[in-house]
Length: 269
Image (cartoon, rainbow, N blue to C red; front, side, top):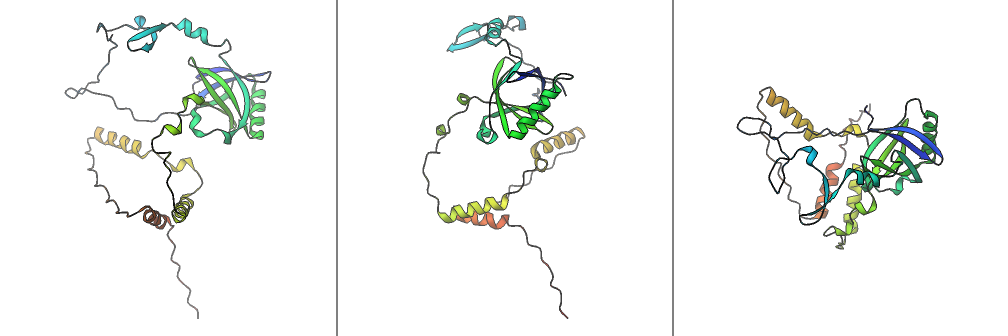
């Protein structure tokens, strides 16, 4: 597993040398754009919108558009000066309960590993202390010139760092059209909805879920490489004519009920 960040965790006056490793991976099947006539990939050149010339990498700078077609240039040196001197140090600001952070704030996960031959004892101590306290550490970290809020928690035999969105990066739910409309639900409708939730509730096991679309796409690609014609898609199932919400809930509860096993009665002599 390749190291993507190297630094230390500051826990009070204790510095723990660590390395970060990307904990997740994107398994999307990437399709390229091709020229229909000769099946060759399409390339994209970086051109100037004003003069139309193709621009070399050394002639490209960064800038901010503060008004339509009005830009101010920002140099790499100016960006670097904004970073703290300790940009390779993760200082734990405080500790909170995991239940206090809504999942909407989570962005990306990284495994935290101890730096080989350095600070394994301190790493193990912090992991154990976090695990026993049932708390998570809140910290700031700079990754690729961007500061992130982060949560540090125990995970298996190690620790995980999760980058978080800052509060001003999470939009207000009040901006969503329709959510502020008051709708009265009958007690029977609510009971049926709760019953349906109970019937569909089970222990979360990640291995039970799979990306059906990706599996089908991978199979389609293999079939086309082998010259196998894809099967025609079957027609959509007919939509049920549901009269009202309660009828839909009742039908759903009935369909979600586990099938009862038929047991034969023993004959009595």
